Image (cartoon, rainbow, N blue to C red; front, side, top):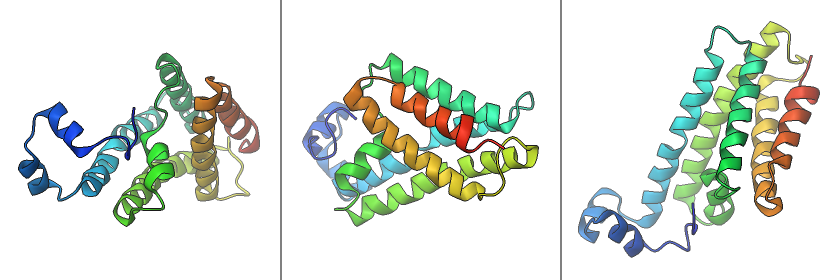
Length: 176
């Protein structure tokens, strides 16, 4: 998150966790395969957290989505706009140069998008989200816009792009 894929050497990683190089290669084979495993692992808490919001019986799906993004924005603000999203960072850094990482990124992003889609579909069933667009298309747009807003957040040092993304899509464009 701090130095990027290319800015972080394998020896630096091994020294930080005190693991011999041979043990590392026994499990991962390469830095590239290690990164692919990190990607697969990284998305889990975000998927789980989003599912928890959507499964809350005291909230409709649209409100749950808004709360999820509001909490995410608050956390990003606390970190001083550092890091953003590891997936977005790696998409820009190795998404077009590593087949192994690209596939792991695709799978992780689709898992996240699929949970987003289920929430948007539920909101459609509840009548709070428009139904002339598919939940999958809206989830793709939301994930794509969110990733772009995360990049703008970094350069503007502000959560304004994130708030605009959520307000414009969840508060306007997607509304029934």
